[in-house]
Amino acid sequence: MTEQHFDVIIIGAGLSGIGSACHISRECPDKSLAIIERRQTMGGTWDLFKYPGIRSDSDMTSFGYQFKPWFSDTVLAKGPDIRNYVNDTAQEFGITEKVKFGLKIISANWSSTLQKWELSALNEQTQKTENFTCQFLLNCTGYYDYDQGYKPKFLDEDRFKGEVLHPQHWPENYDYSGKKVVVIGSGATAITIVPSMADTAAHVTMLQRSPTYIMSLPDTDKIARFMIKIMPDSWAYLITRKRNILIQRALYAVSMKWPNFMRKLLMKNVKKELGENVDTKHYSPRYNPWEERLCAAPDGDFFA
Image (cartoon, rainbow, N blue to C red; front, top):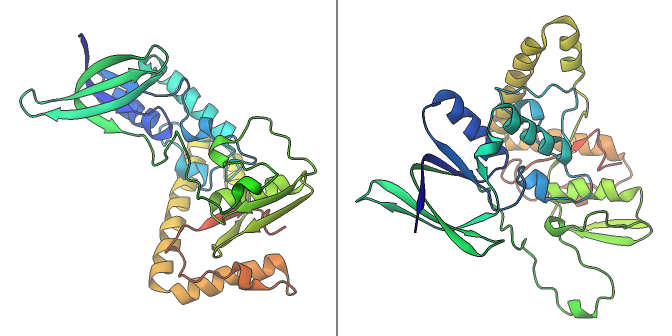
């Protein structure tokens, strides 16, 4: 059985896989490179997930590629915009033709004798196995189970007359207008879905085991917008990127060193968004800030 050999193989054609491929192609142009992608499209998470309001909860100036600046004064980008950004980057840097679509990696083993990786991949369309070898293997598959998102078993679920959906397998163009909806969970996905569904659904309730820290962020970066007017785009981008990274690091460091101060600061923001008449116990986590993920609400949309 023939093998295809490359100096470098990357598994996954999402944000990380395409970014890594661009760096390798630019810095090691003499090295052969292939990306193995199970799906038929690039974009990874940002192409797979279709749930209402899907967006990044990291600012795109620091989340995006430094070699291809993200020029926008919108802080948290929408999922389709990120998918297009990944595709445009791959096209611009000649990476698209290096992607082998529709291949599921079924084994990857290092051979000390041959001093190379040996990979087997299943072509899910033809059901035939394809073999690859490489000197360097980079895994950019993310941390999801792409076949089946986690779903707990609910007692007597079969008696429920409504529909049960998982965000990972959200039906495209699903009409939830006029429906009564319960969103189970209070993580980043729930914080995104709830305000997105609220305008159209008859009623939306978020059911949580325990609250999550939610921080309101401006959806428009007014400082970045001003800088773009008075200096070259590249300067404004670099300054904004470094500023945002420093803020994120400082936020984490302060949370670790002075958790009580950070808790008071975050809860003060919650009270400001909700007003004095709301019981904040539903928004008061039992853990310290950044012991679990901190969620972002652009322009406080979740609180509204």
